[in-house]
Picture (spheres, rainbow, N blue to C red):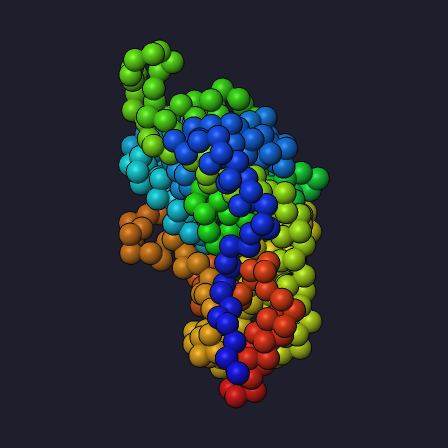
Length: 377
Ligand SMILES: Cc1ncc(COP(=O)(O)O)c(C=O)c1O
């Protein structure tokens, strides 16, 4: 018997999205602007608690606008976590600023706040503070945002949170990212909920969001003709995509619950295997468990790549942990602060299929094949 392929994190529609897209068709808001965009933004405000949100074409666009909004200049430093996806970092290059990468801590796999504290103090002495600190909420786990905010506040360094992977994640008693000057989210096709492609920029400063919206529409001044005091981008989300997002937000709670249950299923099915461990959950929050990530102790002689290829033979998709940014050729000249934790997680980590549409039987199938890899080692 052949089974359908199990993907890492495919889109999971509720059915409602199709009706909402139909509404956009009925009202002929196919030309991109329209009330569905505002509906999506307001739903996001409701979810995150931010005062306002601009719906955009991607999380990368959101980060780019965030950097423009704080007026990052060529040569300015932007400090961020090395264990991440390039989408949150490339905008630093767009603005010809200089990324400096930080290692993560063991308890959360997010920005190491001890390193941050040390480096801020040193940078302040030298008069070379970063223009921004960009912590990343990794694989749906929030960074320790209050700690980061407390460290940055005395130096007046803005904190922009890359919450691309953390829609639906809780930090203490609030949504991930809330408290940062701005937070960027992604609704890319592989995320916990998706708009096909999309992203958003949220802030408690409505003026910043208004400016983001304006820059996302080619920086048109509010006059009837085309007037531009600066340049912008074509970064506004379309109504059709926003309709998908409105439908997806309605089921976000269920999606988070299912991803967490899938994680628990893996722990129950694999936890006794020698040398295996799972991405920890920091005690300050509730992760959305966007992806379940395992670590395999090299001492047992099993490489994640061997496991990945073995799963692939059974049409099961898995993926290496993000390769740290400081190890990427494109960032060979960038500064790096910290030790070997991110590098080690890249060497030993593997992301397992985690899509919320996976059935218990799918999880059992992945578990069975993983156990077979251990048996055959
Ligand atoms: C941590 C992180 N930052 C930024 C992005 C960029 O988001 P997008 O793909 O919507 O541009 C992503 C995901 O794709 C991500 O995982």
